[in-house]
Image (tube, rainbow, N blue to C red; front, side, top):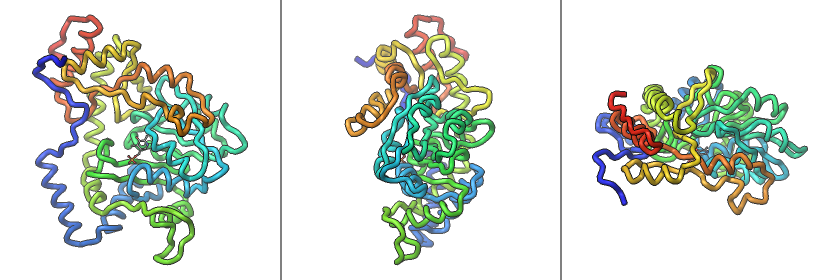
Length: 372
Ligand SMILES: *Cc1c(COP(=O)(O)O)cnc(C)c1O
């Protein structure tokens, strides 16, 4: 039974406010007028902006984050016979992209930060291992120092889909690997109004290969150098992203303020994300951990607060991957305790306070703090 509550707290709110709607309509109309719907001028402009922001030489706009991973792995010459180590806790796209190249996804365990555990990675490396795909899960960059030490000569391909603008030792997510992939789907912090993604690299040869791979492996309209798909980014989405790019730092700032507030008031009751001094998390999701997760979920839902359990099935527990090599003892325990709270830049102060109060009430602290 849902209680009658004054306040509702949606998990996400993807509607576009009227002022932004006007700007986006004008940006789309400019594309209508020049008519270059595929690889129009906005694409190169978008790619240049992202490459600069992430301090990389090249950016290649593609149709989705999944496509970015698939084409990125292909560009790194990963294929049949190779093993690629990734985390056990991520959206299934990470594993699927590896498997679709013909390589075998191998799943490492996670640490308390919910990111891939470098020690687990080192125990899974074999003579067939070709690359590591760390996922900056929840918008927190993995421990890249430890991971690079473990990787040695292996390629690193960052799945930075959730982490645009996150920092580690002052460097941007997407600037650590031989190649990095972002998703700009509408749920992501830096979001298009549809599917979109981007690949980053500093290697001119890899860049050249990516340009061919994103259009059926063709070098010009006729000459095909590799079997691939059509993975190009729409000009309309690039035009939207160019506008949204100007807003992304403000969005991150707002999310970090909400994250700080949650961290401060919820840490006595649940395990909250632990941002270290050398990190800047962007809170793509805000995930708490508590052994009373299922009870808390029902309690919050009854109060009109939308919460989510993400990926209760680890990638290595999916029937198609359960026979693949994996370590997931820690991940199996941690996913039982994880709950994602509403986290988006449109949350009002009142809504944030209501989430915090409700969680404090659940844990039996009846002292409301109405003036946080
Ligand atoms: C969103 C996401 C993807 C896939 O991106 P799409 O744009 O939806 O294809 C891949 N990996 C992770 C970790 C993601 O969160």
